[in-house]
Each structure stands twice: as structure tokens, then as C-alpha cells.
Image (cartoon, rainbow, N blue to C red; front, top):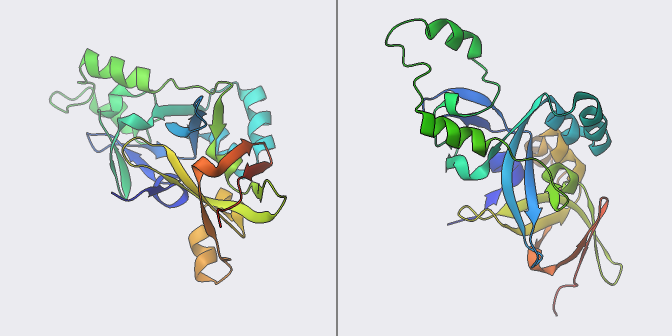
Length: 226
């Protein structure tokens, strides 16, 4: 089972409920540090604030101070049952506290007998609501803050910028980072275009267990064993 590429397999991918409703595109990914130093993805984020944070962390912070999270929604990554062209969620759209792209149609169809709208069970709705309430804590890290971050080793050697992260499909742990050139490109979702134009520099895979420190603008890793 291969790892997931955050920028390729998760960010900018459409979320789709079990009843085939599109509920938004993933703009950011919330991770949490554990006491053992591991970093695990816990929630997918959509909405205007997440989009602004993706462009620049400072924009995201300013938007959050003003908007207070009104236009950001999250759903537990554990609710994703299938990774592919779309991220398939476990429950029906009505079970999640997400801005639904076709909510206007649901508002009309729910008055039509037999349309199937508004029929989520109370148990599924409670589960979905609980899965949509992840909020950042002190140990939390947004993927948007990691992409483009400088990577150096403890000897001071520069290794480039974070261009991608590898996450396990089953337990959603960050297993490695890819360091190279043009890391900031990932914030705009055009890394594929950069690759095709030949601007993509060589990168190296760095196992997450080599990471010693994570700062806002810098990640410090152990030198590669010789």
C-alpha cells in the first residue's frame, strides 16, 4: 500500500458524500504532533479562510481574526473511505456540517416526496457533525504552513524547501517529506504545471523520524546517515 502525496492526492481534491453530493474541495490539512514526535493528519479543511491560508499564512491568520472561522469547515480524515479522483466520505451529505455546493437544489428537492433528501439517520448525522468539529490546538500544524518551508540539517546545510509530504493511507501519519526547489508553488496548486515545464528541481525524500524541530519558517532534520 503506497503512501499518499498530500499535494497530489488530497489538496484541491473534491469531497464527495456517500450519496454522491459534492461538498467542497480540500484547501488545507490539519495535523497533530504526538509526544513521540510523530505527525498525524486529523482533519480536512475547506472554505475561504483555508484558501487564504494556503496562499500565505499571514493572510490566513488575518482572515481568522476577522471572520472567526465562519467560512471554514473541517471534517475528520477518518471519514474518508476512498482516495481517488474524489475523496469519498462515509456518510450522506446531510450528516456533515459542510457548505454543500448544491444546497440550493436540496432546498427545493426536500419538498418532493421520495427524493431521498433529508433522510440521514440521527446516528449518522451525529457522527458526521462530530467528525466536522476539528479545530486547531497548540500541538496542531497546518500543511499549508509546512509547504515551502526551508529544510536544513543540524549541521546547517540547506536541503531546499518542502515540496511534498508522504502520508500513510491507513493511519494517516506523515512518513516523509520531499525537499527540493519551488516548494512555494504547492500553495497555488500548480505543481503539476511546474513539473511539465521542467522547472521542478531534484528533490530528496527525508523520513519524518529524522525531523528534530519544526518552526514556522524552518524544519531542522538530522543529517542523512553515511
